[in-house]
Image (cartoon, rainbow, N blue to C red):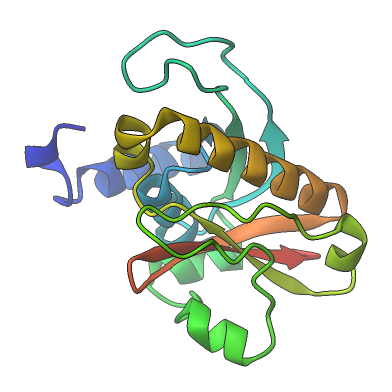
Amino acid sequence: ALPAYRDRGVGYALKMKQREIVLAQGIDLITWTFDPLESRNARFNFHKLGATCGVYLRNLYGAMRDKLNAGLPSDRFQVDWRISSPRVEARLRGEGAHSSASALMADGVPLVNPAVAGEPLRPPTTAVAPTAMAEEERLLVQIPSDFQSLKAADRNLALEWRLHTRALFEAAFAKGYEATDLLVEGGRSYYLLEQNQ
């Protein structure tokens, strides 16, 4: 969307109309894909709409040559929006979302990839072992808050984040986790992954 038209509720209105039309057809599941490193889209899809994701698609569109995507694998999340579920209905009422990543961490939810401090943030050089993931009901995974700016400033760092988070999400989804929320706090973005959703 053009910057002048962001944050005006147009996307939300379109999704509500889509939901209305699809429910009238007796269908209760809508799916789509998006770049998992686009924090803004993730926040909208998970936190506001109540979608979930347990499917990671590697390089879905192959090599993309446009200005925004050139040189990076076109990895995508395939999200499920179960439009008649209690979860979605609660999110659409503004209920049921988690308050903050720091509150979750205080409750013992591990951050599996604390980024290396600095501007811009760098992914850690070591990943959490997939076996450790299965021991937790919930996990947090950090992603860049503004992937577009990161790509423009440092394409190699953007590729590091793509490959780092790809490994984490694929391992977590294979262990039965689903992405259920995207929390933004202190200029940082965190996915919440939960078991048995």
